[in-house]
Image 1 (cartoon, rainbow, N blue to C red):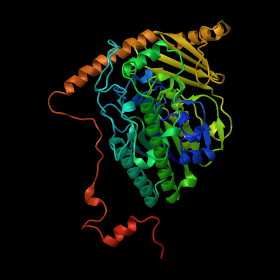
Image 2: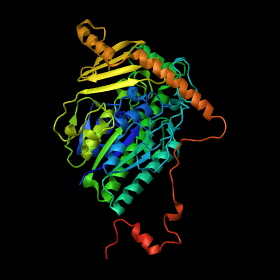
Image 3: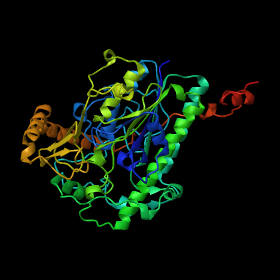
Image 4: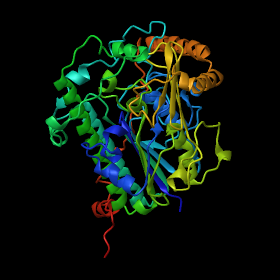
Length: 500
């Protein structure tokens, strides 16, 4: 029998801030348990350090410039095949619970059903303006409020959303068990630990404020970092050490909260009797700087922003650690490999490689991650090449950066102008010039921004027709109704069934 797939996604979760990846304080017992019986990927990257572009790459196996998935207001074209399309065509039941930040009228993208709405808007409201790249869009750009307002609270829209996602995902898992629906692919996508860094007391109280480690800010400020600091107002809004400690405290708490949701869903699969035939994958769309280098949130290719956790566990998966660079575009070919779907099914070539051989302990011939950033707090495309121990970051507007991640994991020493590494830097620069036409990409980014702003402005006039997903619900056939036999309804919805 082909294995089920349960893919659990966090939002803005940097692996460096998880116990599963060695943080001494942050408690992630459920992710750690999966890593203990599966494979942990220690150099996994997002392909774009921003929510929507990263998720579009993750779903499609395409780098963002191939599908114009530039920013959080770029449309995800309905004509781009996703892993949900391929798995569905191969007989999998496909279900999405939670956030995917689809922009445009297609809010399913291959999923047979979607059991919750999204948490963010699906229109073009969040379109940046690269013709005025130094101007903030105050309505939705990140600022320092998330840092200054961090703390405990009884509820937030994010807590309510993630509780709903877990509830409906768990319910659907048991529906599959009751109806013997296999194989299935469920994506359960949560918004935590994304800022604001506000946590319920039971998660906040897991941590002693005095033990919260502070970020390393002993860095020279490169031009892109300076632009980012301006974009989030970190250059003009002062935060205290206690503000910073509170924000990290809240992030750690919400990471543990997300981990608890991982545990809930794995437990549901276990109680449904399907754990032995279910591959579980845990990842995130990007990380969070969380004050490192004086930066917050994401929007850059430094390690805390660009790296993501990636853990795979389940039948046939070896226990181990893979250190080869990989990225979220590798998820699609990996899922197709798990399902036994060959490349002849592909509707368009993909940029990723299957990670299943590495997860099975068979080794990994790939050793590369590619990134592209074309969104807010930038004025030109920014490109990442991570190959082996080396990371190269290029942008026409800034000096290049070259780091040896093995020797310098904190990225303190830019080797791009070091004479000892001149040949390597030149080779990376030549590869960038061959791989990308930066000027043409910038021209296209600006053109699509103009198009989307025109569409959005028009859609604000007259009758509102929203693309936001409204999950269908048939209350007349839920629980117990007059056209049902009460005892039959009780028997039908009990799992495991009562055995006389």
